[in-house]
Length: 76
Image 1 (cartoon, helix red, strand yellow):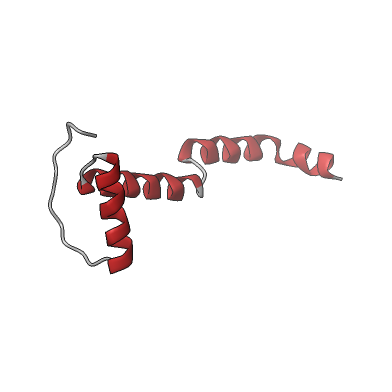
Image 2: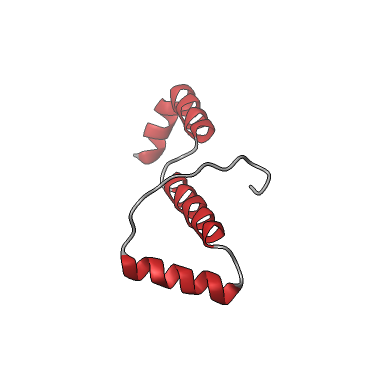
């Protein structure tokens, strides 16, 4: 991610959370923006995991169309 373009944005954060993150950055010898990047990337990955990947769903649909009646019989 380090080589990607950066963009500024402004937001508001709970003051206790911000103070904790600033202290964490300082104790780790890292920049605040690095921790924000990491936190946002973790959030994105976490949300992606809650949804099946498109190629997995496509394979499931194709399998169900082809073998749906067999799946029904097996379930009985």
